[in-house]
Amino acid sequence: MALIGSILIDQILFADDIDLAKVGLVNERVNNLLPQKTAELNESINRVKQDLENLRLEWEKVTAELRKRPTIMIVEYANNTVKRTRVANPLFETENSLREQMNILDNDLRQKSNLLLNVKFVLENELRGKVGFFDDLEVMKGIILRSWVSLGAWLIFFIFLLALELLVVFNKLGDEATDYENRIEYEDSVRNRRLAFLKQSVETA
Image (cartoon, rainbow, N blue to C red):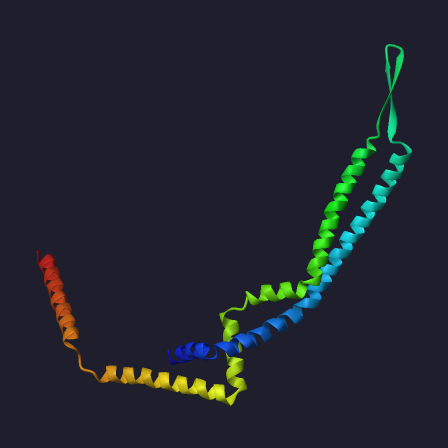
């Protein structure tokens, strides 16, 4: 209990130091994760760029074909007659679909590029929210062991709380039973005698 108490008190006393140390802890984790996260984003951006380039090439082929033949001739045979009708080239639908896909990839590329620019800030925010109780304990241990002053303060509180705890224990050991405890003990003995009497009565009946 003394150990827990001293830890809780030190968390209050060293709150500002712990917050500063947690900033350093978050920065260290960010620096460890940043190269991997940046590489993943760059790889994803390159994939999107390649897909976008492939779509653009296909779109250019389709638009070139549409410029040559914006309409096509449909020939129908019925009752020995031939009917010719000019209609819009079906490639217009393909061109619209390709343009929509390129817009989607453009937006995706823009988002990933923005994320790449702000990846450090995003990582810091994510990791700052994931600093837990055990991280606090690790940080506090580092603060205590790094400075004789903080170690001395921690030992003073620990010894003080331990002395209080031992004082309570020794006082409890030396105390005689109180009236309340005597009353409880008496009622327990009366109840036990009644139960024994009832049991004996049942057995003899």
